Image: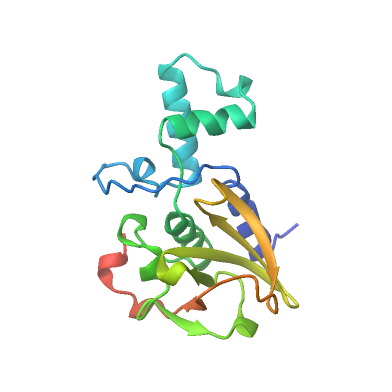
Length: 189
């Protein structure tokens, strides 16, 4: 059976669910993306296993909450732009460098253009907090938007949804990545 591109995106997004929110507020450089909130789900899982092996802990014997606490203790997690970049790269085939992007960069020209919420679609981005936070749209069904985010308030990667007419959902715009030709080389791998 052939899976749709959306089904593949959902499967990829599910790998991130429950990963702690982590933002490298100190801005200290580390050679590994996984140590600065920009690693992929696979990199985070492998680093979690590495740290567990160093401490003689068996990940398979841990509950999801214990794994979450272990990852937090070791500063493993992902920030909002790191999550969005990995999902954009997966879904659109872009090659954004997670280290060189931010919520503000992802939702600004020339990288993206603002669109009407009624035009929202898979892999569009929701800008919040004046560019300080970005949310990845999984899909729009009628007037309902289903999204995934990594947020400080949610404390981990999770799904959410809202109706486009719901005035209580605050955002500063919906953005669509423009053609790859307009993407500055500095943002690429």
